[in-house]
Image (cartoon, rainbow, N blue to C red; front, side, top):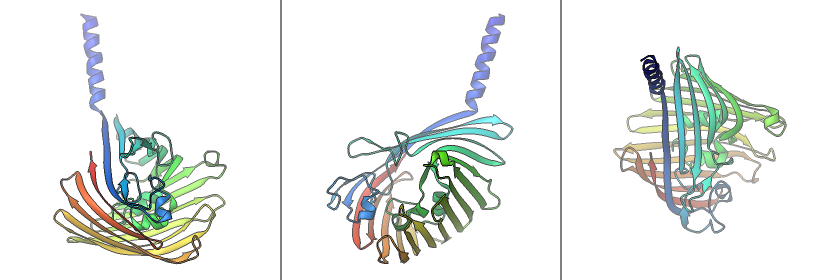
Length: 318
């Protein structure tokens, strides 16, 4: 009898613990057809040697996003404290291969976090504070063909390995996140990455900055104002490439949504360009039509450093 009671108690305790935990499988499937001519766009694309010809696109600069599959979980530890994790792998719908986004199998995300009313502390590979700062105001939802991302790389920092980060709670729309990489984990050069964000109602403003020891600081500041079916955004960005050459400029654009249809036009202009020695005006035109809350078709034209790139496709989120 006692053994049965002990077993039932253990089962009940296990059920209670499980009820306080959750694990979610999620992902994106995105594929299309298009042409990528710009060398800067091809550098970040999963395309073959004939990438300046019309071809199947997956994981490219002219897809809305990269296909991926991920798993995330969270456990309620009590007292307002939670623990969680996120593992995410990129997928190539062309051949079924994995796309590491610069890392291994879990190249898109591999991290662990603790959070509470004091904020969130995260450890591992993840999107950077700089990226999240730009995502507040970027008009295409940080699509692969975003002209700001294609030109300036969202302040030149999308993901960090071996990152320790702390994000504050939301204070009436204000928040901040600070990331740090030890020099032993980054070719003997420490790195700092941060953002400051205000997002409340129709207004979104984000400041992003990051600096690797021995190099110049990358930064971006932008804002977006949404009203009725429209949104306007502008930004100013300064980034440095691996050779520490500088590229800086501004962006301005707008979007309109009418039912299931959305149209976005976004432009950038270099004020300094040491990468190519020539200043460019770049731009993207994006059209999307929602088939459901999770699936939409899209078409985009990207003018990047004098070259024309285009793509049409379908994206499904699950």
